[in-house]
Image 1 (tube, helix red, strand yellow):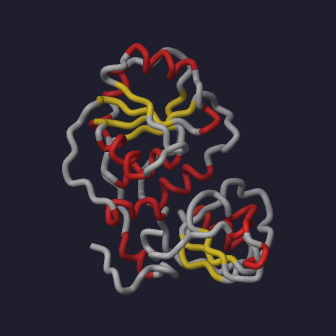
Image 2: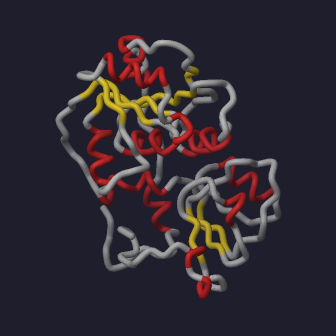
Length: 244
């Protein structure tokens, strides 16, 4: 909406839109929502072993190189243009300076909400750690502000990691077991797109220690991402509004 300055409609909510172009912009939806009228700009794949349901109308950019490899294996042309569009948020909502309020911010995948280890950690470190809800919010800008108010983020949610990277907040990919519903493909796809040398999460099975987590902060390096390259192929950007 911020890029196009137009109203956003859910393709599946309107029967009369079914033969119109639909834009696949964010999320791991290519493997199950693609149809012949889909135009892909930034979304990705979650389960690479599943066949593509249809050949899309066009692919302009994808989340990462693993998604590109998958599409090529399915007979689809795909350019080497990568990036989750959430990485563009600093161009829409720049935050140059925000007072830090917490040492650690915790962002959980929906399947991890209510995790007892995190609940105990937040209660114990309530003045130094906060949990951030990126699913249920009234204003997305508030979510960004809560992330930037933290010195560091630990996240089992992919977009928790992406938003943190976008705003240069050190972050760690965490999981609570070796096997989760989402697997690791989408995370590795994203990390490859921004040249983060990560191949596995930090598995958390027991009590969290604040000082242990903070040791990871100094090893964080900012991501490599070409925002202009992704924007240059955006199919719906308002050409009259030039982003910085």
